[in-house]
Amino acid sequence: MNYNETAQYLADTIARSGRELPTVAIVLGSGLGKLGEKIENPLVIPYRDIPHFKASTAIGHKGNLIVGTLGNKTVMAMQGRFHYYEGYTMEEVTYPMRVFARMSVRQVLVSNAAGAVNPDFRVGDLMVITDHINFMPNPLVGPNKEEFGPRFPDMTECYSRRIGSIAHEEAKHLNLNLREGVYVAGTGPTYETPAEYRMYHILGADACGMSTVPEVIVARHSGMEVFGMSVITNQANDLGNGVVNDGDDVIRAADRAADNMTALFTGIIKQL
Image 1: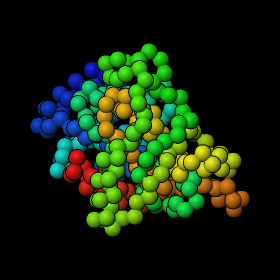
Image 2: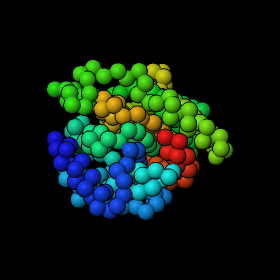
Image 3: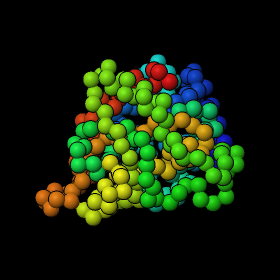
Image 4: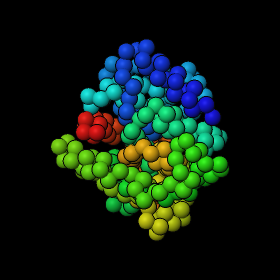
């Protein structure tokens, strides 16, 4: 993979615009691209213009990299990510993380739209991800990329406790009630069956989705500090109540919660 070529293209493009190189990167999940619209003095770079970037085909993913100011810092935000279910390899799914590492990004804030497994969670809740369970192929399988990190990276603290504490402080200022929990990742693109929801709950998961974990693994392998947040956009359906999961409903629910997440991320970034 041509990580250096992509990183150099982005660094040159940002430099020509007169902006500083960002040290914070943000990944925006389904329906959460609204945060990108709050970035001030934006430089918008479509993925199609970035060497070796893939197309983001999922609903609610605009496919732009935005560089600008948020929380008084220069940030780089992905309006949409790449998913394994789109047919991409794990190396392609996680490609941006290694590009960010090459660009000396220190913190990565990842977000996703997720289904509630915890019965106490409701649509619109914001959940700080404290840990994950991975049912997807591990993106580090294969020859280790020693230039990024060790063969056997520690995953004890995938999600930064430091940034998590900042998030809770900011939530108090914003009068937001944050949830905390474990995110479980499956390949998709099918939504979970009732039996799978029950299994995830038994295993200790609070929310489930089809993304995020591969990026987090590669980001941690590369030495970047990670904060993760799920926007709860649908609830576990194992009650036989006739409710079905719908992609358009997920996007609408994410859009309604995006303002709260934007305010929270802005406050977090100010303190990084």
